[in-house]
Image (spheres, helix red, strand yellow):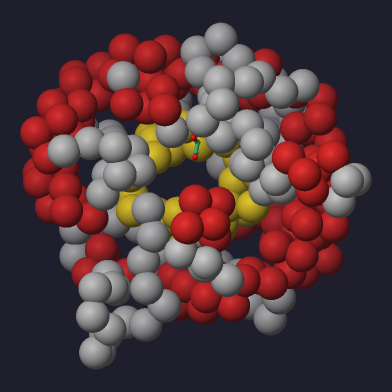
Length: 259
Ligand code: PGA
């Protein structure tokens, strides 16, 4: 079992900036059609901000949930171009991906920015999905765990989880994202254990068991999902490329439910 308060596997679809509105609507409709089969998994779709409102309407009446790919660290104010978590809440978005490696790389999102976003989300009772992961070079240099611990502490030190809080940590090795590569499930399990230990140092292991899920992301597909989900500490998956194909995505959800 997954060693978590909530054993239902969590499957998050990250559509990134890959779809025009009509394509996103079409995909949401197809995913909704197959979602009757998803009982046993919690499935969260994360479209771009511009499609959030329309997709909220499309998935109404299904068990699917809506998430976002990012948000700002203030609730309200003169912050041109930014989106408040409160604006997301208005569309019933409770789950927000924070610190994805593409944001760390392309818009220089820092540990401090990530920390402030997570703090605000938790204060609003929303669920951050903190993404962490090492690059190929960091792994080759034997720095993987150092990098992961730095990212975890920068994001979470000084925060606390109350009864109403849920946190997700997504381990996504940067060199696996979008590569189509499988990685050794035992390496994932080992890394998740390291992450769990670090989270326990911050929050206590009792709080981690109650309030935190650790999921895996990086080229998850219908073939490898079962191997990953079979690992004790893997409570779900974050899916990019394969989430853009409704049939393949359904197969990933089905594979996640089996374990
Ligand atoms: P991928 O993306 O499934 O295409 O590797 C995962 C992610 O970036 O969250």
